[in-house]
Image (cartoon, rainbow, N blue to C red; front, side, top):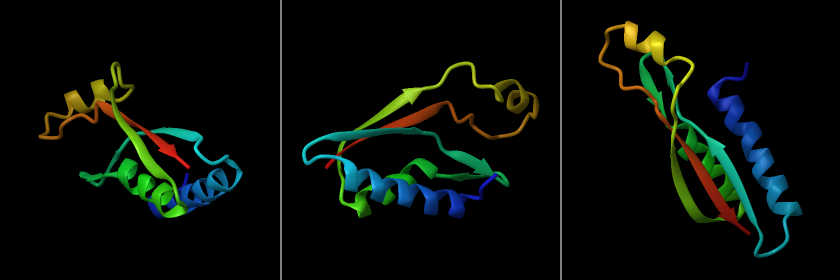
Length: 96
C-alpha cells in the first residue's frame, strides 16, 4: 500500500499523461475521497486536484458525492470518539 506522498507522486504522473493524451477542450473526471491517518484528516482529494491543475488542466466542476453505507461506519461509530465520519467523496471534472 502506498503512503500519501507516494500516492500523490503517482497521481501527478497520471495527471501529466492524461493531459498529454487528451484533446484540447475535452474533459477528465476523477473520483476520490479524503483519508484519516493517526486521528488527523488528510485532504487527499484537494491535494490530488493540485496535481491535475499543475499538469495544465482547469477545474470545470467539483462535485461532492454523499457516501452511504461506508464499510467502516460501524467500526467508527463503536469507537465512541469525537471523529466525524468521512461520508463524502469528490468528483473533480477537469478540462484541457
